[in-house]
Length: 249
Image (cartoon, rainbow, N blue to C red; front, side, top):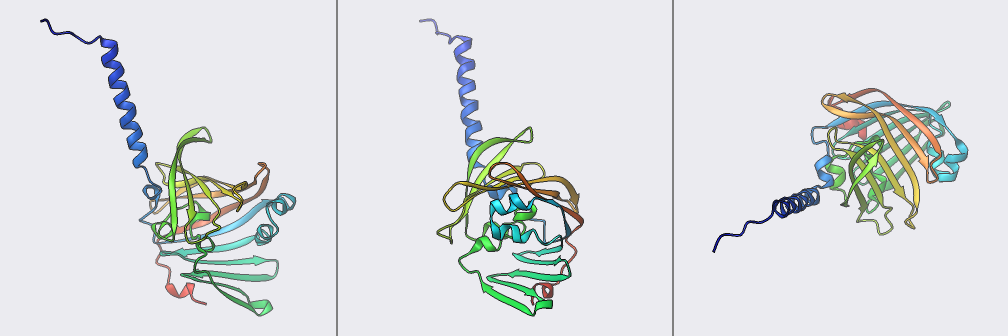
């Protein structure tokens, strides 16, 4: 019997289906850990509050608004998970240090020194997350995540991941829109503890320092999309060899 040939349309259709399956498999293999910055050892930046809207900040939360009373701060970070912020509110200086499971807050002028154990509360030790950078140490800190596919952000289609802290039974859920080439966070949505939209961060104007891309404009929005505050990073430095002593108070 003569061999029957498949119509060209069926052949091309089969190839198309296989390609879709392969593409789906490739996306399924994508993980949040693919977008960390393993070359980052330490980070320093001066942060200046460019603008704020107190009404919108208070709508997000009273405690949230308190943080934006600090107009200037020096941020220093060192892997793994060591963070120091030296800030000013008028004539008052505030020091804030996270080192492992210990968080220390000092206000020298008012003779305040408060030490808190944050074991089991990994959300209070976010490290470089607020600066738009993911590190391996952050993801190792009781973080679970999953891909939610591709979504649009500022006219681009980018990978999006949901994450939450497994050590915190009441952990908020977060959505991260990531730049696959520069490996930085473009957008960070946070739900409240009831699963409703709470606050959104947009991280813009990235610059490359020592091979690491860093956003230099951080915008904060309320759940109803009103601009609450804008912070600008200057004097950004990466991998300068920060001393461990900076993170001990």
